[in-house]
Image (cartoon, rainbow, N blue to C red; front, top):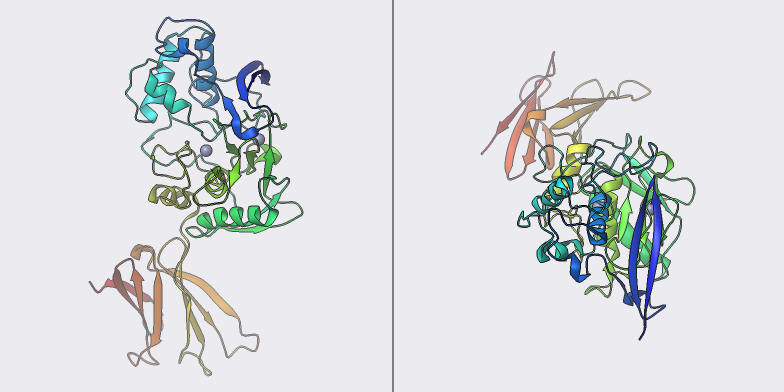
Length: 409
Ligand SMILES: [Zn+2]
Ligand SMILES: [Zn+2]
């Protein structure tokens, strides 16, 4: 079957990008192949080499945050690109290019040769997220929170387009599972809507109007944008390259939509790429990964705190003439929070939350009773904190202080 060569010029700010693809089997998107870094002359490129293959390497390093890229001030990726990434001379393997390549090799645990060796080319050719890495951030050992965050816990999303790879309900389900991974470990909730939404989900190809065109099959699979305030309307949005063959099957018959969606949602919530290979927020796609690694959980909780896992517990106390309702709930930030309802007041007002026991850490379950200690009786509770039990009591007044935690083991 004849191959077709497509060359495309993309303008990204003032600096055009050129991408060259060879498509085998015209019209069959699954067979199109991205040829970045596959020309023979590219292997072994090193300091002081020059020419078109050096330019290809520089474009790759530029695109993914390792070399300086000129972008307009208001470009949604401006905040993401490393603005302090080194300036370089185009088509010349200069010191800046060598430093950028070594930074890439270091970030991904490759031998730091400073040479575009076979191992590095193989690594760069793998499918990945289109979002730039941020390799020079301080403490780049694992997850990184970028700094932007949603200032509300209840977020909405809507689909602007669907992929034709499978039916709309399956796509909705795949995204719901992806959002659910982040919902499970944070106070965040995600609701699909049809009107205006915080997060817009799109399936698009090539240039789709955000200055970050998709590249056909392979290499870049998707990208997501940080939360407000940067980026304007596009903040928090998630785009999938519909040139990819998306799938929901296990074993997969294409690229697993839930996995890539969960990764891009991580960006939409404010996470950068992690250097932990087993993390969902690792930039490269390595097959279905429909779970959060501890690194992802630590990362998102550093931004939004943890989801309170325990059930609230309610009793009727001997406080007041009728006896008030007393309520304890695990707090998202750790420890517990106390509420009471004054049942003697005709409007039955709830009072609280009154946080306590924050030093106990994340409480996963709690149980509460009224005891015969004190007058009219203390409140006694036990909280489960990981594998340990912590005891607290509230005296009968007049201060009504909570005391604890007292760990039982
Ligand atoms: Zn990413
Ligand atoms: Zn996009």
